[in-house]
Image 1 (cartoon, rainbow, N blue to C red):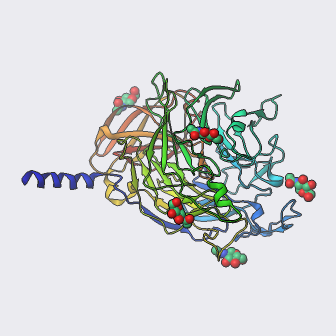
Image 2 (cartoon, protein in one colour):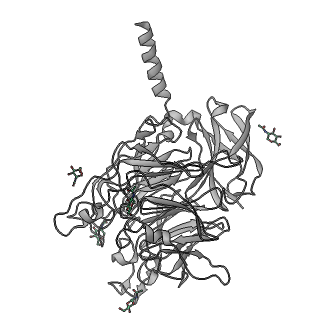
Image 3 (cartoon, rainbow, N blue to C red):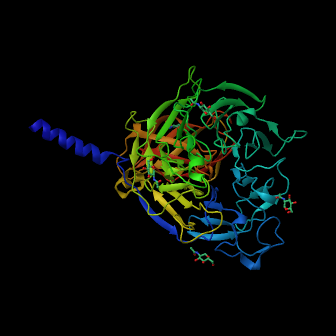
Length: 543
Ligand SMILES: *[C@@H]1O[C@H](CO)[C@@H](O)[C@H](O)[C@H]1NC(C)=O
Ligand SMILES: *[C@@H]1O[C@H](CO)[C@@H](O)[C@H](O)[C@H]1NC(C)=O
Ligand SMILES: *[C@@H]1O[C@H](CO)[C@@H](O)[C@H](O)[C@H]1NC(C)=O
Ligand SMILES: *[C@@H]1O[C@H](CO)[C@@H](O)[C@H](O)[C@H]1NC(C)=O
Ligand SMILES: *[C@@H]1O[C@H](CO)[C@@H](O)[C@H](O)[C@H]1NC(C)=O
């Protein structure tokens, strides 16, 4: 009897101490930003660059200073004084309209080490355009005509260790290219893998999932298959098994994927694991897209995880708490993965999704199998096709968009065009954890580091500290669209002992990643994490 009571007490106490105990909080940031957030990128000035497409028609926000686009080519209108891109300022919670000239629809991008965003491709006259957005106060888009060698629509980008991006695939483009190009480099290189993974006319292999492996090769996933690819010699160096079950995970059977946190960075072979979640059974797109007798069948409820540098890599399946398609996967500062947005029936594409999933789910990769998922509190707003999400430096996740219609449609449809942006605060931001939360005091914002540099991280914690449960993480801010966060990459830095340097003041010496293959050059957010509670991030640059 007493033992049972004691056990109950321990269980209750354990629950209280459980950091990801399910919860989280939603807040509406702005009810109407004027456009539907289809693409999103956080810059190192804490501004989020957001854009949809110029060919949706007139948006709900006008351009400043009487600016207009006139004699627009290949769009249904010829005169447009509305904006199709905005900058969201996290600090002031305000929007600034930006001018984009060419159609950005279903484009892709990366941030460069100078902090600017480089967006490639799109549709119509924008199909081969490169667009640059800098971090200066009043910056606007600068567009480079024919910056690409060919049309890139639904491609995936990755920022490479050599300091430029690779642009992979796109509709009817089983090829890849680099931006910018080296002197004398040809336009596009053939990429048979995308031909091999194409169902019908490029179904189920668009917006492929691309990650930089720790050996410098690319892990590329499309449909139900994946390879390790040496982009320098253009050779497939490894072919992984198909995902068990064989169902597709890429557009329009859109699931998502992350490279799980990289740690023990000074080990001989750094372990790299990829997690792919959600998608839709083969045939779903045709069923939901049928002219007659449409059917919106249940999405996949599985994730598949693989250790890509294992001698004998195998996928392990896990079951999510609910089926999900068009889900985003956002890396949180503590290395947990947030699954957010999407639907439980149908696929991506116009009008093809049903039954929005309003509950985010947090996946803890370090928990026991079977105990990794934690369902969070729901939003009220469906975020279907063309919705986005991204981590902010303060640990919140900004969520926007959703427009499964060919134009802006605000009523008499299942899922009206959504112009709002919300923020989801994971449970680690709840006030009960305030005393555990570190504050970084060193390095200062925008400090620069070299590779394999030993550096001191100073921080304070208001409450009692468990020195063993301190870690320092570094996260590359990803480009998000169509449920995939390109360039998303989190590293847990190798550390020495944590030292107490004063009342509530601590320091830990860490070593920055050893090479650009581990951490491509550029700005990262650095976090000190204590018992899974992250500090606010500090921008740092590695080069
Ligand atoms: C957007 O603008 C259209 C046309 O002006 C208007 O009908 C609609 O109500 C606006 N929608 C929102 C959500 O403000
Ligand atoms: C734009 O429209 C013109 C005239 O209809 C057509 O010739 C051209 O191919 C189109 N260009 C693109 C990029 O769609
Ligand atoms: C993977 O998809 C292809 C079609 O693209 C299919 O032929 C193959 O059987 C699938 N793999 C498995 C294991 O089902
Ligand atoms: C979603 O899928 C389930 C299971 O297949 C089905 O029972 C349900 O009717 C579907 N919902 C819609 C809206 O089609
Ligand atoms: C961190 O490194 C510095 C320089 O080597 C050293 O003085 C300091 O004691 C180290 N701090 C801890 C906590 O080990």
